[in-house]
Image (cartoon, rainbow, N blue to C red; front, top):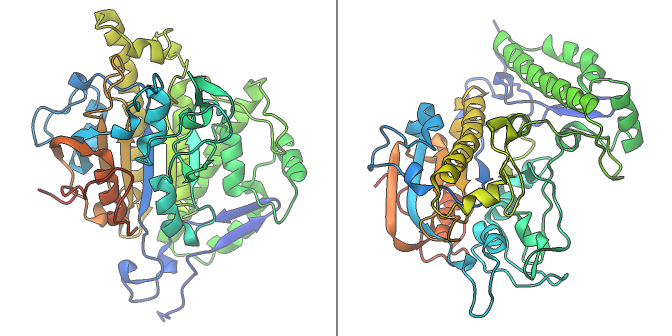
Length: 451
C-alpha cells in the first residue's frame, strides 16, 4: 500500500441546495505519520457554560468530603463522570449584591454578573451597561477559525426589552452573554432556528427558499445525498463510520424538529426563518438543544456555547415531574418541607440533562479522545440560597477538559470571599485565552490541575 502525505483540510464542507455541512475531525484529515496532536487537524479546546436560576438546596448539592466518592442527591446523575468533575464550594458573586439604596433586583444582577464579574447599571431604559462576558472573551480567541464565533442558547423565551424586576431591564435577566458592556446577546430557544443557523447556507439560497424546502418536508441531508455518497467512497472504514454516526445524529435531530413542528400550532414571529415549535417537556427541549450543541462542537462550527437552562424569574413549571408550581416561587420555600422536596426534584432534573449532554460528548470521538476530553464545562447559578437571595457559596462545578490538564474527582472549598471570577480566569487560561484580570477577580484559582 502506498501512503502519501496528502490529507483532507480540517475545514471540509459538503454543499447542497440551501445547506452547507461541516464535517467532524476524520483520520484522513491527519497527514500520514503525523500524530493528531501535532497536526493541523488536532482537537481544539471548547467552552460550555450552563446556568440555572434561583439557586439550589446546598445540603443536597455539596459533597461531604474532598474526594468525590458518593455524590450528593442533586449531583448523583453525574456519577458516571465523577472522575471528570470538580465541585467548587465557597465562591462568591459579590457584584450581584445591591449597592446602597439600590433595593431589589437580586435575580437580574445574578444573571448579569455571572460571566462578567461586573455590577450592572440599574435602568429600565436603553442605557444598559454591564461588562464583557467570559464566553465572548473566549470566542474572540477560539472563534477566529469557526463558522460561528459562539452560540447563545436558552430554553425559555427571550425578551431583551422592557422591565423585569423593579427598575431593571429585561436585558439583564434574559442573557448571560455580553459582547461588550453595552451589547447583550439574545439567546435562541427555537430548535429550528438553531438548526438553520448551523446548516442553512444564506450564500446559496434565500430564507424564503429554505422555508419552502422545509414545508415540503425535504431534509437538508436529502440535498446532499449524491455528494455524501461520492465523498464516502474516498474514505477508509473508520472515517466512514464517523461520518455515518455524524449524519445519523443530524438526521435524527432534523426528524425530531419536524415532528415537533407538525404537532405544534405555534409560529415564530416574522423573522425571515421557518416556523418552529417547542417540545412539550423540559427534558425533550433540553436534550434536543444539547444534541445540536454536540454536532456544532463535533464539526467545529463553534467552540463556545452558553446555555441558560432557565432564566431568572422564569414562571416555568414542571408538570412532567408532577410539579405545577413555578420554579421561582418554590425557591422561596420558607423552609417548608413539601416545597423543598419539589425544589430538590427540579434541581436534580436540571443535572440529569447535563448528564445526558456529558454522555453524548463522551460517546463522540474527537481526535485522540472524545469531545468531553476537549470541552471544558462550567455550570452553576449566580444565587446559592434562593430563599434568601444570597450570592455567596455558589453552587458551581466544572467538568471535562482532560486535554487542558483538568483534574476531576474532587471537591474543593475555597476561602471565604473568593470571587467566582478567580475560577473563570483560570478556565480562560486553560483554554489559551490570556487574561490578567476579570471583573472583581483577586487572583487565579489554583486547583484546576490538582492541589
